[in-house]
Length: 433
Image (cartoon, rainbow, N blue to C red; front, side, top):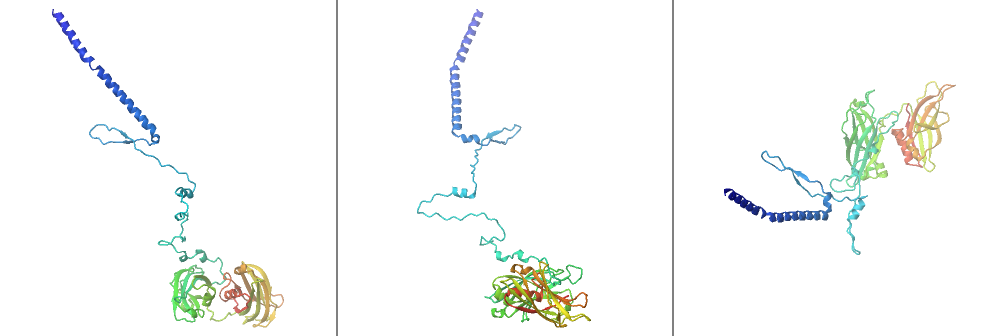
């Protein structure tokens, strides 16, 4: 009896369990179907978004962000996409294509605005295209090529002076800028820089005011770049001359003067614009007021025909010649025309008797093109004729030419002849050994 009762209770419990588990099955099926449909819908929407925005395919990879964490838990990596797109590259060949891309068509009858032209310029210190603050004035800077050193100096050279001259008529001021001096003689034989030069600047014949440069120590090639100002009216300008005297302060007072230059200011008023800087260079010479040459002097006349490119040299006379005792009183003059230190033509006068005061009065023609004036020099030598087959004795010589070959009176005589063509220029030239 008990056995049947237990079996009945067990069957009742089974039936109850079947009732409890069979009831939620339809609900689970419905929920699963809904989840599946939602997943399909989400996937479909994601695909549509990706297909509608193809540019997102080329986006940069996601950036990993490390979140802060506390405790012993391990960090988790969270990936967050960042939208980034490279700009479109423009292929252009020149600057003109870029400017054309921004130009807009202008309707007819309407004036287009003027735009500044863009130019590619190379920046340098002398570009004067931009004014205003920060601009440089090229006129304030002198051309270094104008101050180039000479490669050759004549024998017995005392020094060469570079200077600027400018006259301002409005304020009646003469501006003299002393730049530099080259090839000064050293007071100590065998040393290269045994000279302490000072330059004295004055206007003659009015010698009351004398200005002086700064002293340079131990140099035969001093650089000054100093400006001196003199007050003088334009009417008096032609009657005055600029005189610069170079003195070596390391020597004694009696022998301290090296030499001087003298520039007539009438040349500044007639040949050069008075309101512009004019670079000049002149050779130093000894004081012309001193005694003449001990060997004698030669009277010469130069005449240049610019149409025929012909230089006529007239040997007129000589005086105070130092003849050898016991020899003949016959003398003659040899003329040598040189170009670039190469002999081009040699001529000579006839032998003339006259002792220390011979009269030659003979002329010679030389062809000197204008392009060769600066590289041409003329050497004149006086010889005393010897008896028999003996060698003739050289009494003295003088060299006429440009600043490359001559100095002092010889340079002035040569320059005046070519500066005044078709005009006879006559002068006495001292003889040297």
